[in-house]
Length: 284
Image (cartoon, rainbow, N blue to C red; front, top):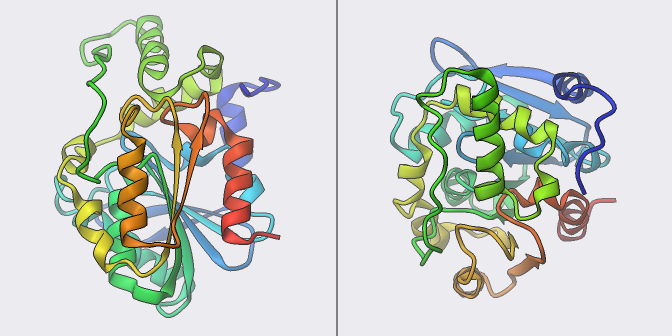
């Protein structure tokens, strides 16, 4: 369902951010910035490429009712500083794990859910932490070195100077790449897309195609959960391979296919994704 606009998009983002706490951990010239919501067993949410914590804006409220939900702007994205290397998942993952250890302590167990490019970062973190990580939930994740659907041609925004034309291009790209249902392209999603793309510095698409998550899977002892939109433009027609790969590494793995949903599934089908996460993670 689209978000009902009772306030401006900027006001909606500010209101959600105000429900949580801002935490900073060391990174570079600028810190790594986290949003923290709720209390309880930590649940880390990692955003996708060209994103920020707001990729999870429709989920943090529900998930934080019984969990400490920690959502960073990963290095090279959003309000955070840059990693040492813009071209490796390891340079993104290491400061996230170090920051998490500073916030919750290096021995505290946690769960992790990751969207798109965030799956590669989650894979590296989970592979290094063994049984400390209970669940790894992959939401439309890349980095699996599996067949993809034909590439979608997005509108080039790099040369657009007119603000109205730029916003229209973002609107078009959301419909082409992120969402399946046209109604999902609402004013909030357009606002988030424009803000996130403008602040993204890490070359996430290049990293995702390196197969980092695929290579990390054999070292992950956490229970695996997959959530994919059936109409995801990256993996449409190839969900069987993704399910088979997860279950080959973890026979306990569960795999959820959401009908009528595209790539940014936790926004487009927020209630359904929140319910799946509640069941899989045993949220009260």
